[in-house]
Structure formats: C-alpha cells, structure tokens
Amino acid sequence: MRVVIAEDLTLLRDGLTRLMEAFDFEVVEAVDNGPALLPALLGHRPDVAIVDVRLPPTYSDEGLKAALAARAKIPGLPVLVLSQHVEPLYARELLTDNRGGVGYLLKDRVSDVEQFVQAVQQVAGGGTAFDPEVVTQLLARHEPLAGLTPRELDVLRHIAEGHSNAAIAGRLFITEKVVSKYINSIFAKLGLPPSDDVNRRVVAVLMFLDA
Image (cartoon, rainbow, N blue to C red; front, side, top):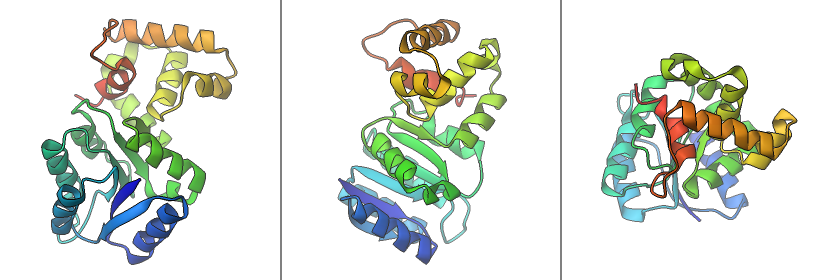
C-alpha cells in the first residue's frame, strides 16, 4: 500500500515513515511543506495520504488546501488528516464532500500504534476514521442531531470512528441486533432512506459537518 506523508516536524515525519514501513506500507514520498504536497499527491496517486493540517510556509492550512485540491482532481483520494488540536472548520471543509476515504486524528493518538495503523487502513479502504475527541466536539456543535438519544449518539460516534456493528456491540455491551436497531433509528431520524447509491453510514457521520 503506497503512502504519501506531509509533516514539517522532522522527528514525527521520520517516525511516521518508519512506522508505516514497519507495517509493510511503502512511503513513496515524505514532504515537509505545503507547496510540495500537491505535486506529490498528483504524481504518486497514493493509496492513502497522511497530512498535517498546518505546514510551511504560513503554518495555517496548507496541508488541508493541498489535500482538497488533490481530491478535486482525484475524487475519493484517501486522506488522513493529523492535527495538534480539534479544528472543526478544517474537519468540515475536508469531510463534507461525502465520498468517504477520510479521517481526522489528533497527533497524540499516533502513540497508539495499533489504533493509528488501523485508522490508516480504514481510510485507505474508503472508510472514515475520526479521533473520539474530534467526534465528540463535532457532534456537540451540530443541532440536527439533537433528536438523537444519548445511546444513538454513542452508536453514531463509534460508527464515525470506523467500527463495525460487531465492534460497536462489544464496546457498548449490547447485541449486534440491538446495534442494528439503533442504526436504523439514526437513519430514520436523519432522513436517510435505504438507497443502493448512497452509503448511509458515511452520510450519517458527515451530515453534522455540513453546517
């Protein structure tokens, strides 16, 4: 699986490179600034990109802008965003294109190697992977979800983190059948009827970002 990494901190960039290679990923390029990221993404068309939001030269949103520009030219290009803090505006701007293959993790989560690698794999596979703290803050900011019960919010939070029904059942100590009932209720309350063309799990997670 081919990876492009964008991180300006040398130690973290090198650490991410070694980590990915240890798990049989091929790091095709690792850049340390915004202007170099877009050509790397378009040139390599990686299976997944791991991108810091804030990169030189301005340390504002160069990483995000390059990721958005790349996804505009390569629809669905998998991007896992890393950030030092929860930045809801950046999360919404990237994730509301509704095509999956996106994630948003806080940098301190990288220390949990197994969880981080799973997140990279989920995003590369077209899924979503959100840091629990990011999900909590984004859910709290989105009024249309006010109709969901606390338990339904718990289930939606776990869906946003990329967990399967079986995994959610295990974490909440309920059966998969009960999880399915909660998910159907969430879909109904969010106005998501069955469809062959739309991944309702992804849409349910992303709806609260499109404010």
